Length: 103
Image (cartoon, rainbow, N blue to C red):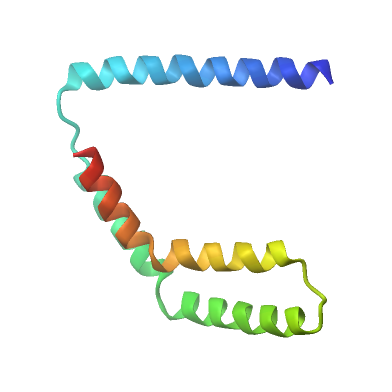
């Protein structure tokens, strides 16, 4: 039990140090060019929202509905499937909003 707390404390300290170092580096750099990351992110989201993703989520929603009707599913699975669908199909909007907030 004590070991888990030590590992968690070390992880929090490492993240804090990395964040501090990254903020200093970004402050020295001035502006950051996100164009390549934006292009890769846009292509990845477009791929995710393709026909395969639509078929997978449609099947997941149908199976989830049948299992929920028969009371054979944990409701957390239902919530997580809908949250996953929200992130996959609403991802481009989220990226646009985050990009405008960071600019």
